[in-house]
Each structure stands twice: as structure tokens, then as C-alpha cells.
Image (cartoon, rainbow, N blue to C red; front, top):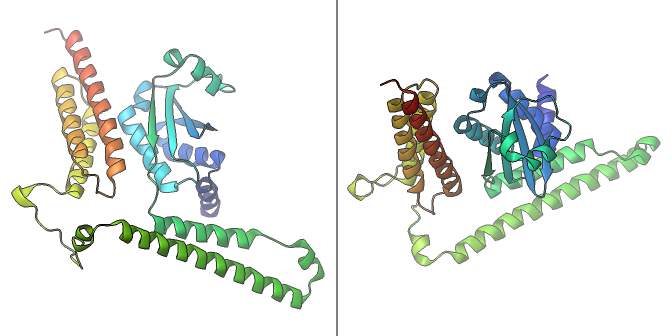
Length: 290
């Protein structure tokens, strides 16, 4: 069973849309969500369906799908649009249908940009893919002859080819690092600490980028948990304030931070969640008998 799951994740990593949907369906099954996918004009279009709107809460579903996809790191897929609607029987032309009538078909849609893994991780993935391709590739003519000499020549050639590919990848990585150092100013290079495992305190007890990011994530988790049980306008107003604080922390992350792009993406999402919470507070206020 685990071998089959690993194979599906490998196919999903290669950018196989069917495998990606299988992984998403497996991990979203507990929420009762079914997904469909199609790759159109450089964008992965996902359709998430459930029987109840509560199962498709935007502020919980979007980060969950983003985390799943970034853990898979599908090749050649960076832009994703998440569409949600109540489960329908008609599924054959779902993409054409939501494009034709998005306002009536969808509960909401959200665009996200997947963060690319670091360059060393990309190189490691390419090496692993090369090994997997080498293991599955077969030469029918050599297998048919069963000639030991020919098989030995083939194996030497295969190993040599993999060695050349690995060397080229390592050289590319070295060139990348060299160019990075060349493009850095002397001040940038001198500011890199030699080996400092503990962060240097900043003046005025100002939070570091990592602390801002981590605290924003904790606040977002608190807001999600509170949103699952909130009923009054006061509770929704407090949730909106929590989302606002989380968004401000993400917006305060500097451009030099390694997860800056993710922080900007999350900040935009938190702002939208803040508006949704405010709308819920307004609705509860309208229906309040007091």
C-alpha cells in the first residue's frame, strides 16, 4: 500500500495532474472534500466540492492545499487557482461551466503561487529523477541477447552518463553560488555571520523576520480555531482583529527573508480572511435581537 502511495506522489512530483488530484483527495477526505484538476494556460485549475459550505472554508482550505502542493513540489506548476462550489452531479464539463457562470457556480476562488524549493533541493530532485528513469529504462535488444559483455558495456555507459549528469548539475550549482557572491556587495558579504547559531538581538526588542512569520502563523491558527465556534458579532470582530494582526506581521517581513514571497502571499490571504470575518460580524449584528 505504501509503495503504491509513494509511486503516486512521485508521479505527482513529476507534474501528473491525475496523481496530484489523487493525493489531494486522499488528504482532504476527512473534510469530505472532493477535488478535480486541469492544467490550462500555465495554471493548475482545481475544483473543490463538498455537500456543505462549512466544509469549504476559504481560510482553512487554501493554506492546507498550498501546504500539500508545496510538499509535493510538482514540476512546471507554480500558479494555482482554487475554485470551490457545492457538490453537483454534472462533472463532465466543470471547467467550462465555472468559466461561463463563475458568479452563480462558485462559492469563491483563490489564486496562489507555489514557493519553489531551494536550488540544492531542486538539484537533488533532478538526480533522484535521473536515477528513477535509469532504473525503469530498458534496452530490449541487449536483454534479448543476454550477452554478458554487452550488458557490462551498457552498465558502464549508463553509470558514466549518470556521472556526467551529476557533474554538470554540481558545476551549475557552483556557478550559481559564484554568481551570487559576485553580485553581492562587500557590505553584504561582510555582514554574513561566520558561525552564529543564536540570533543577534535587535535594538528595541524588535521582532526578527522569522519571529514575525512564526507569530503570524500562530495567530492565523488561533483565528481558524475561533472561527469554527464563533457565533456572535463580538467574537467575529475579535477574529477579524486577529487576522489583521497576523497580516501586519506578515507584511512587516523584510524582502531579504528567505520566505518573503510566502509571507506576502499569506498576508494577502489574511487580509481577505479579515474582510470575511468582518462580514460575518455584520451578519450576526443584523440578526441579533438586541
